[in-house]
Length: 286
Image (cartoon, rainbow, N blue to C red; front, top):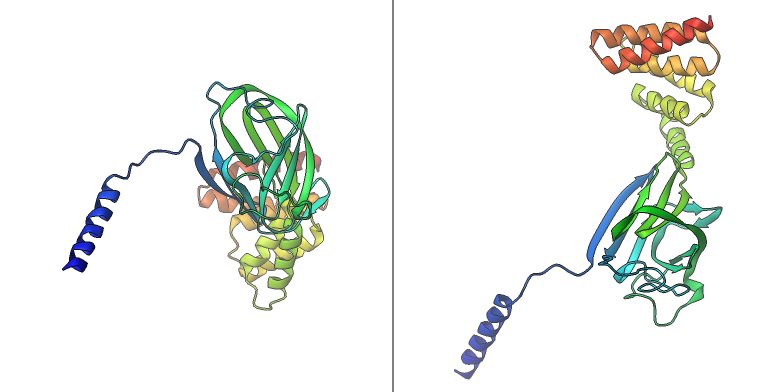
């Protein structure tokens, strides 16, 4: 009987506890962001404090001291490939991001131990994977909520940006897109069963990245051959641009006219405009 009473009491206490649980937002809301930069996955998590009328840098966040770069547990970054900040390599992996704000510049520190609550009680310099110094920039408008973003994206780089109050930190980093893409191209095109789309994708990437245009032309020609006379108009648009870069304007005009014809059949206004404008320019050269 005592056991039954004890179990009943425990059950009632548990139910009462859950009934009394209050849901309320945290003072600093958490954010998780996933961003592709070229072919590299970048993920970061952080908590976002608000300004709330306070003086932030030099007061709430002191100058010349290590800051957790946000609120609560560590702000963390995870890179799917090795990346490079200003000529310094940061191996792929997960890091805590700490900063040391100064009046006119900040130190950004990627720390290999990402399981701390705030700044580690004992700082271990051997765990500093990368440290860079970035000048501060003044914003015209006030950013109320601390914001981290990866912006100004290209195939080969991105900008890690920290924004709060009227301060912006902007750190450019490079990703190994060309290395990854070339390895992928070599691996897939070495297969004798590679299809037309694979050759088209390889040619298109080399065109966009200013690669070897002779290789790009061979690949787009192979893609067209594999389609056996049924090549999409966008294949011929890529070929026209490659030929133009190689100085073969006559060939570019012929390919662009084929692309324009196909685009008109499909009523694709974008490709009609691209080819029409290109043809006007190339025909002036001849």
